[in-house]
Image 1 (cartoon, helix red, strand yellow):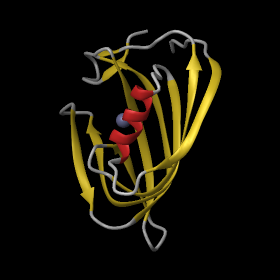
Image 2 (cartoon, rainbow, N blue to C red):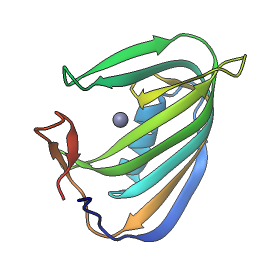
Image 3 (cartoon, rainbow, N blue to C red):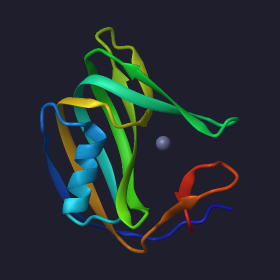
Image 4 (cartoon, rainbow, N blue to C red):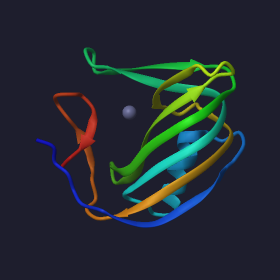
Length: 143
Ligand code: ZN
């Protein structure tokens, strides 16, 4: 059975990320600077190179790959919670190429911003901390 907590939508911050910044690291830094412990992230824009991952459910390891070309961020959806005492951003992206073909996966460091408009919604409620989940091998929320 799913275990859910209740949250109230708090303030939102919205802005433009820096050209040449690492997409995941920049959003993480914003959350840490603003002391956002629980939140929701969304963004659109473009990247000059992408590094994304696919979680192999058999080996319990991420398989990362790089797409070395300009891509649109069609959708970035993610959340903010706590891992090892610090705010951590977990985000997935759908990226589109010049023919409109889409790629997607778990956003990893190494994805470089060309231009990006980002919104973070702060959620008020219980803090979720990530810890190793034995069944999946993933750092899931301890609920
Ligand atoms: Zn993921």
